Image (cartoon, rainbow over all chains, first blue to last red; front, side, top):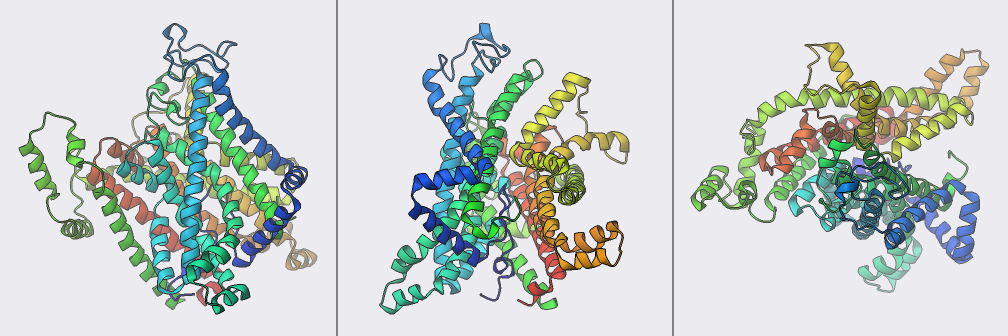
Length: 324
Length: 315
């Protein structure tokens, strides 16, 4: 441990996800990896079944996410309305059979708009997690394995990035790049990546001391090869667990950004921008315009949170039986 | 302890410097010319643009701009808002009290609710108290604060025909009105933190309550209240402090959003409109400000932690 790293050296839960991850000690993280390999050997289907039986709540969470995805990507095939289709004669209608979630001030069908908006949310959620997982993973492995000056430098960069409140850093980056879907992904990923890097680093630090890594080094394996084939695979499982837990958070940040006008722009719908701007003036006359988009966000976030928690409990044997 | 303090303080300074570089760069890499973006298309002559650039010092090399900006900021000469033309220090003076009060009241909500709910649900594990608490935490984590805020305003308007006062009322002028004005936003922002922290209090308490010394305390005939508050809660508070620190920094983000929902004239609202109007000096200052506050909070949390747990400072 380099001398100047009190904050990074402690394994206190420094990351700011929506879900609080208990302190990840290196040892704990490798146990996750072992458990993961065990699951893989048992076969995927069996693993899924076991998960459903042992963690019914987690399965419900996964089910909710699937339902939302089905609605978002399947529903749009069946809806008779377009996402921007206006029909002023049917403006501000209450939920009915024709419009299950009512219509907005332009007579646009809310259910249809929510379907398209959910596509954006899910896409941004997953994309963010993949991007931050890859960047955070690479930074963490390199920093933890190489150690020394590289580590010291990377960890200071991480310190700096983690000094910004999550939402505010994301806002600043969107300002810099301009408000569109792609840039929002970059912005949210950039705020999550340092937090991930820190956890992955702690895993890499412990893997570095393993005998098989020493053996690889002894037969003259280059560093990049050791990192890629021996260290990185061990870091995949803990990263996966963290990342699932962060999906809900990423969707929340996205909706907050677009609520503040820094994401998907009108007239294209997003769950956040449907709740702000001109629409906000009609909430008293048409409360359903306020209720349904928020409900969709809550559903997605709740689903991912519960699923993420259950996944962590299953993959991390040390947490089994403790808490709930 | 002193050595730890010095080390941690040096790190704080290093990080602050890093933050200043990041903020400065973010604001300079804005694609296109900020001046053109600010003035909109057409209607502005090239001479005018050149003059503004000169006034803002945007025509000089990057490192000189950086050093000047740093020097000005250190002297608290923050410059003027591009959009409103007011001094940024003036904006800070008028808006900080709003944000500060909102943050303090939300934090109060977090601490009070988390401690009471967390301890109760640990004591009455697996009873209806516990179940209600769990629903409360799930809600706090999944429901976006801005949506809850909108629903609260909507419900108050539809059922009680009551609208939050638009005009900000300082505490010194009318304490009652002021507290009512801040109560709802504080509750909405605090919910999330209360849920997360409460969960930590609960699990930490459950762990501590199984310890031998709790049994000993009970066996020697101490009142249950003393056992819970003095023996259990005190020892259970260590992990809670860390979570509280994280929640405090997250709260800042929540405050930015909720000020927008409740139309409160605080720093968060200023940041959102500054971004909207591309008021770069203002954005630059506010982002730095929020980052500084976060760093100081983290610093204090680390110190508290080291003070509570001697193992950390000897590492």
